[in-house]
Image 1 (cartoon, helix red, strand yellow):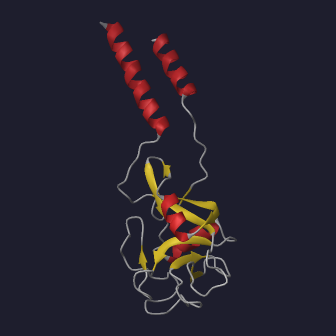
Image 2 (cartoon, helix red, strand yellow):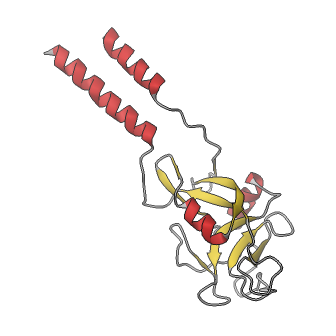
Image 3 (cartoon, one colour):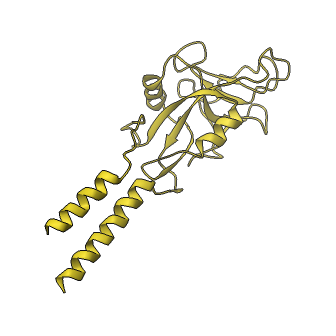
Length: 191
């Protein structure tokens, strides 16, 4: 039994420990992270899909309630950030483009349905920005044809949870494999 305990201890010591900056919201059990950097909306959408946390594949965040919007403000209230909403395919018809809500209509958590929150000031603004001018405020941005900011680049919120694209973390796989090996050794010696 001492050898088994020693093998498990060595395995745990050798497994990489991944530090997490993700914050869990109890409202839906999902984890969120603000990714700093300089991304266009399309780059943020693609980058979020390459991230994983606790075996869940990330996606550019969706916000479906006032409480969730307020939670994201608690994570980051000072920097503008992309969310996965877009009206690129049909001006004024905003839909989520990632996560379990992909394809569903975007409703601003503060304004009732039908109230305009995006102004399309320079024409061709098709991507959802949060923390615009004030914490939690939404606006449309990016890709403007006549804008002084045609390549609008900001950070974004990544969300983990509610999707079925589960990818095991490498450290989890190492622990499972180590446990199976240790169990096989114990079983073999018990014979």
